[in-house]
Length: 254
Image 1 (cartoon, rainbow, N blue to C red):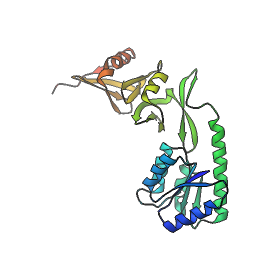
Image 2: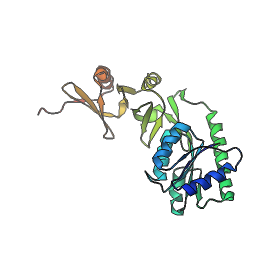
Image 3: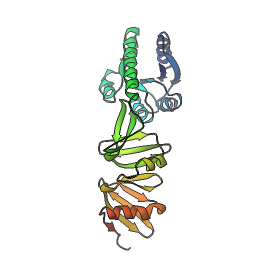
Image 4: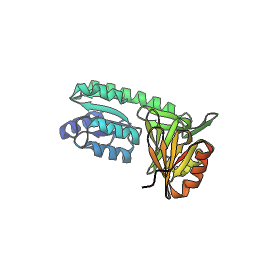
């Protein structure tokens, strides 16, 4: 089990490392002194779990856990001297919450819980992954702190690119998923998701209006979001939306 330690106090970090190194089957792959470094190291080292202090410089552990949830599949164990944070920790789906000073028996319980969660996750990941196809259309298996979640294309309102990832925006929340826009365009072919620029897709039935001014075109969505249409995508976007009954609106001349 590969573990990353994120703790800004050197003595507390050394104690936690020493206790973890006593445990068979545990490898310390890295140590971080602040929240930003923890996220960066998790990106590079791909740990199975992060032991994360809540009170750290550079953004607290709760914020770091949110970032980790979007960027990797590591389990989170919060380590802190402040018990009131426990509710926030478990609402994030943390594997455990260990109070300082860390004791061997309590750490052993946390590691047992981690092993059980990792075992359950491996079983889940043995199921179909990536993109699934069924009668309801394509779906995507997306990593979160709680394991893999199936996101159906029919539930996605819009998609925006984020480097080598994309954000799936649904009515309930947004999911970060590793896939390219070109791969998405192929997988979403034949659905009501249309690519409107190099870095965005929108769902046809969520477009409230087409607004054109000169050579520019933008789409107003039902939730108030405005998405610009790229010049090379305007003709096919307009054709698809017109066929769906979306009205075009031109702003008044200045």
